[in-house]
Image (cartoon, rainbow, N blue to C red; front, top):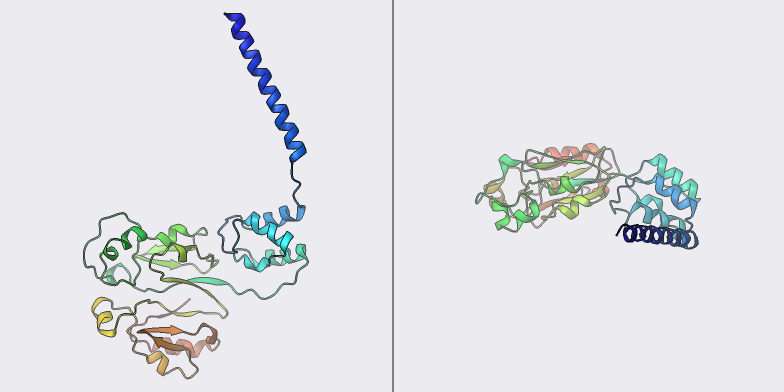
Length: 268
């Protein structure tokens, strides 16, 4: 009995050694040598694999930079110094890269959201939106359970009084929050000037409906558009829309924002 057990153990050990040798040989013969430039670029990239560049991962992006000449400026999560380092490695030319930032097009905090019914389901925005719009009267506004904040790989969004607050220093404009929001109230915009002015509302309801259900929504009055001689704002389908390319005159735009009766034009 003991002899049989010893033989079995030795046989298993022998097979283990044999398989190890085969794997070692295969690893040596079939190993793919990676371009050192790919490895170097991959280490310079943030490694969060947010996908904002359009590639599967940071390593995948590094491979496309080296092998296909992908533009390093597509990565928004790196500093300008690192971006310049990438251009040095690839031999490409740099250029102006404007920061991108998430804008939340809703200003209604928890106290401002008038309910139709009390929601007691799964506490995620996507789940709640499927159940009578989370019991909210406004079908355009933020539900407030923080799917966007949970999706952000950089910790740039935090929920404050039932509304996501964006940290401009942390936001890279990767767009994960846009994908996470079931109501589409978040957009990504380039910040070309010191401040970016936007309308913190997504409602297309008429003025009477908005006044009934939200004290901080856009009522589509058109004051901002009427006073704007250079087309800084226009009203479409009961909602004011800014022209982000015409915000160089910051003081003028700020003055127009101050005329808004519901103070729904914000700056970040």
